[in-house]
Image (cartoon, rainbow over all chains, first blue to last red; front, side, top):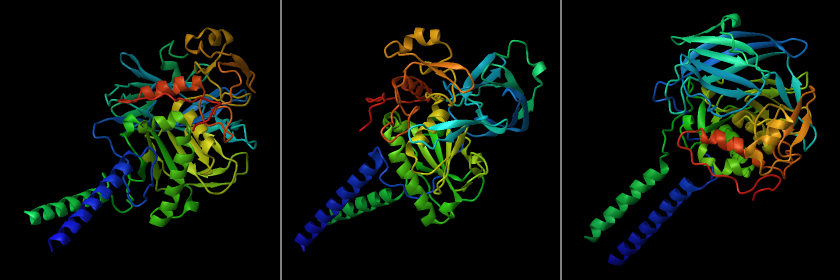
Length: 188
Length: 271
C-alpha cells in the first residue's frame, strides 16, 4: 500500500514537471508554437481617457497631379488607441497643433499612390496614381504615454509642403477650417 | 503525514493544471458587438506600446464564428508571422514590441476591372490602433496597397513585410523608378548634397541617384544594395543598414521598448 502511494506520488511529480515545462515553453518561446482560434481575446479599450481623431477625407487631384480639393466627409473624436506614429517619415505630413505650437508631426505615404504588386519576382511593386481617393486617417490625440496633447488643430501637408487641409478640434468635435483662415506661414 | 503530502501534491497539481489550461486573458464565444471584432494572435504588449499588425480574413475563409474556419485562418496567420515577419531580424529580434491580431469580420478581394483588385473592406473601426492592416485572401490575383491597407495572398511573405515597412516605419521605396519616394534620411534624400553630408550615413554611404517616373531625382545612401525595400525575392528578407536607423527610431518611440539591433543586414539572409 505504502509502495503504491510512493509510485503514485512519483507519477504526480512527473506530471507536475511536465505541465510546468509545457507552460514555460509556451510562455517563453520566441515564435508561437500554435495559435488557438478558440481563445478569443478582444483588443483592449484604453483604461485611461485617451482619444483618437478619425477623419474621412475625399481627395481629388488635377491633371498635373496637384491636390485640387480635400473634403472631409466624416470627422469624429472617440476613445481608443491610435497607431504609434512617433518619428515616422512619409511623403505627406500630419501636423497636430496645440495652443503652444506643434505638439506632434508624422509622415504618411501619399494616399493617391497605389502600390501595385509586380509581375516580376524581384521588383516589389509598381505605382499607380489615383486622382480621386478616399483616405481614412486615425490620429492619436495623446502621446505614447497617454497624456493628452491638447490638440486644437489638425493640418495636412502634401509632399511639396503645401497645406491641403486643416480642421479644428473643439469639445470632441472636428470641423474643417478654410485654408485661407490658417495663419500665414503654416503652409510648408 | 504522508497522506497529507499526497493531498498537497494533488492540490498543487490541480492548481497548476487549472492555471495552465486557463489563458491569461478571458475567453468566450465569438462576440458580435462593437469593439470586439479584433482578437489577439500573438500579443505581448498594450497597443499603445507596440507595433500592431491586424490580419483580416477574406470571406473565402468561411464564417469566422465557426471555430474550424477560424482556426484555418489563424493557421495562415501563424505561417505568415513565422515565414514572413520572423524571417526579418529587425522584426524577429524585437518581437516583444510587436502585436499580431486577427479580425473576425471578413472582407472580400476579387479581380478588378483595372490594375487593382476590387476590394471590399469590412468595418475596420475596431482596428484603428493598427499601424498596418493586411487583408489575406486565398485566391491568386495582382494585389494593391493603399496607405496602411494591404491585400495579399497569405504566402506572399516578403511582399507583406515590404508593405508593412512602408506603413509602420515610413520607409520609402528604394528601387528605380516607379516607387513611392520621400525624404527619409539616412535612406533617401532629395538632393545629392544632403546625401553626401549626412553624418549618420558616413560609415556606409554610397550615394546613388534614382530618377522617378515623375521626373524628380532622389538620392539613396546605399547605392544598389538589394534589401527588402528593393527586392522581395525569397533570399532578400532583411533591411539595409540605413533602413534600420529609421526602424530603430520608430521602435524607440514606443514606451518601455527594449530594442535589439539586427546582427545581419541585407543582402545577407538570416538564419
